[in-house]
Length: 153
Image (tube, rainbow, N blue to C red):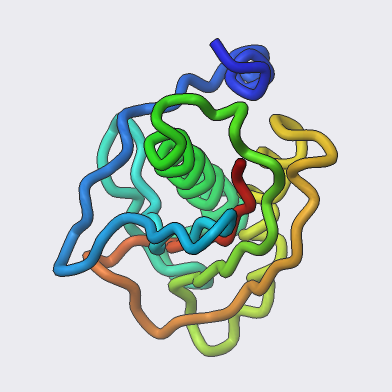
């Protein structure tokens, strides 16, 4: 088990198998030592986490959905690294999309659900740039979708 997976386990997180793409795209693309991971939907063991922030879902539930996205992102990174998450050098940037009403303005707090998990699990390697934006709708009605850029060795 990698050092990052040990830290995740201490947080009660076991990485799932990398989710299959939901449409016509690849889950990740590697260019040199940079790994671009396609947007990961808010999905956990119970299924898709569906909702609209500011309407059917509160900020805490949205942050939990973002946390699920982060877990799926790390699962994709592990798959791209041939199962060795210790090949991860750092998280470069996350792009977070929040399914929210026009008057909802707490997208950064929602995406903190992902940033907090990544920071706790990866330490300095998890410090990243980020965007947190509103979306009128997301695929399959999910609450959150997050894409990521990573440096690997």
